[in-house]
Structure formats: C-alpha cells, structure tokens
Amino acid sequence: MSVVHYGGPAPLTESSRSVLRLVAKKGAVTRPQLGEVLNLSKPTMSAAIAELSKLGLVEATGSLKGPMGRTAAVYGLGPMAGYVIGMDVGALQIRAVAYTLDGQSLASVEHQLTAREAGSTAKVSERLAEMAEAVIAAIGDRQTLLRCIAVAVPRIVATSALNRRRPPEAVLDVLRRRFAVPVLIENNVNCAALGEMLYGAARNRQTFVFLQVGVRIGLGIVLNGQLFRGFHGAAGEVGRMPFPWSEKAIPVREGVEAYLGSEALVARCGAAWDDADEAPPSSAKELFEMAERGSATASLWVKRHAHDIGRLVAGCIGLLDPGLVVLGGGVGQNALLRGEVETIATGLTWSTDIASSSLGNSGTVLGAMQLAADYGLGLILGDTVHPAVVLQPLGD
Image 1 (tube, rainbow, N blue to C red):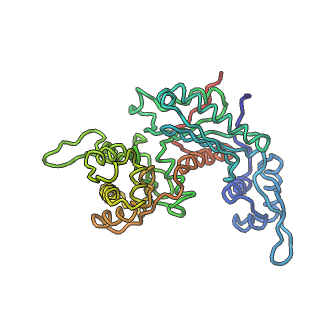
Image 2: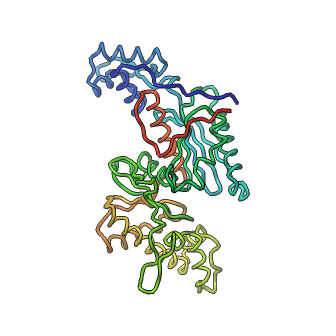
Image 3: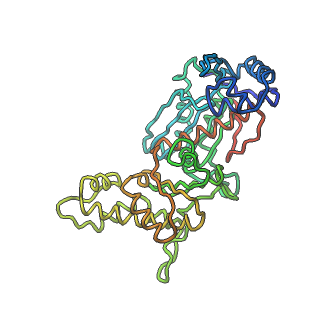
C-alpha cells in the first residue's frame, strides 16, 4: 500500500480559520448561519469561503430554503480536509474506525486477537497496520487524505521514567513505518471518557469521571472539558490505591484492581457459592445473566459487588467532586449495578449523578477518533494541540 501523506498547515486568513473551525464543529451549515455565528460581514464571508474552496477544505454540499423563501448555499468540509482513524487495542480485540473531521462515519472494522497474538507485541503491531489498511480499503475513493491515526492502549501512556522499560509506542512500530502520518497514543480509559463526553452519557458535561470496572480498574478524569492526565500522564490509576487498609492488613500493589477486577469476583463467587441447584458462574458475564434470570444467589453477589464499586466511587467523589460518574467497562456498564452503587456512594459522600455508559465497547475507539480529529484539524489550522504522546512516522 502506498504511503498516505497528511500535509501541513494551510496558509489561511483568520476569518477563513474561523469558518473552517465552525464547519468542522457543526457539520453542514449555511453561509448566513456562518456569518451570524462568527459576526462576519458578507464580503469577508465570501472571501473566506472562496479561499477555503480553492484549497478544497470547504465545498458547497447543497442548498436550503429559508422561512422567507430565499435559498442559501450549504457548506461542508471539502475533500482536502481529509479524515482520521481511531483504534482501540483491547485485551483480545482491535477496533478501528474512520471519520471525517466533522464527525461523519466512513468505515469501521474489528479483529479478534488470539491469546497468542495478544501476548506478542510484534503480532499486535502487525495487526494494527493491517486494520488501518482494511479501513482505508473500506473507504475506497470517498476520501483520499489521511491526516493522522490515534491508538488507545490499556496502559499508562507517558514519556517519563514510568515507561522506560516498556514504552507504549513499541506496539506501533509497523503502523508508523507503513503510514507517513502522525500517530497519537493515549490511555484507553481516557479515550473512553472522551467518547462518553462527546457521544454518550456525559454529553454536555464539562466535568465528570469515567470509571472502568472490568478485568482492570481505571478512571478517566475530565475537568472543564479537558482530560486531566497528571504529572506523569498516569492520573486515574485508581487500581493502584492502597488496599486493603486496616489495622490487620497491609496494602499491596494494585490491591484495588486485584480485588474489584472481574476475575477476582468470579473466583470469590466460586469459592463461596452456596446454591445447590445451580453451578457457580464461570465468568462475570454469566453471573450477571444469572442475576437477570432471577437467581437469588447471583443477585446477592451482584449486589455485593455493586457495594464495593460504590465505595470506590465514593472515594472518587470525595477527591474530585466530579458531579457525574459514568460507570463503564465489561462489568461496570451493567445496568444492574447503577442503583446500588448510587445508594452506597451517596451514603458515604453526597448526592452525585451516577450513569451507566451508553456506548458500551465503542466508547474507547470513538474517543481515540476524536483525539485524532482534533489533532488533524489542528494540523490544518496550525493550532497547538496537546495529546498525550505524538509519534512522527518512522519511514522505511
């Protein structure tokens, strides 16, 4: 596959930059709407549209008749605005989506990893490149200019001493060699939080937290519409909070994650299961399915787990006062948990909105895509955008 070039900043006037930003944010919009929002005169607006049209960044997509019977041209992004790819590296699955910079879906693909593949950085690296190629093939000739790629990974993403032994970019080696575009890398829980803010349960909320509860435990923190990454890029690693914490117990590393993770939950169920009529569940998914079918024992274990999660949520509320906690992850997003979590958290702290993720497994890849879209638009405008880590192409 030929290398796809992303281009650099366009030499735009300030009015043209303002128009392009608004079109990218709102999608198709009429010239009068642009002028009203941006407070630009008709001559200035005409000059900006002409400049952007000449560069292929904006194009007329149709017309709209107004209430007075007048027809106004509708403008959207042009072919040279390009598109971006977002990717999510899960435990046993890779998801990839492609979107235009104004949020129009172009293609999506998924690949199930074998346990052997998932355990090999080289294999995952190769699969990521293959997934990008599959997305581009699915797009065909609808779009030709790839701006950048963003990848969500299940680990701390930082350029500090925290990652010297095993830098997160190692898994992106083939991708960077095959595509001459910047590659962004971000923690998967942070990406899921962005996905919820833009498309899910946290829409129109500028401050909230996203708590992932599944095999692993993590927290995505959004403050005033921006990800809070912390000094090392490791903010939100709640799985590393000291636990247990009492006179008789000494906290261990990642004790919260070891206790609240789905594997530990299933192990506790199996060890203490007292229902002679039904075998204990072999997975967290099976436990919740049993509870939904009316199993009293399964329901009791779900309630206990909800109480444990509620105590962790209370700690997050007491520390950050986020106003909203979105529960996600393979276990956390289950609707059976929300009520009990809210009861426990409120009893230990104060009333805070608790919501279940409305995006499920797609939230992380959508968040990665949005990171790429923001960065891609910044490339055109020459704006300074600060993702966690930006990796330039390696070349052959």
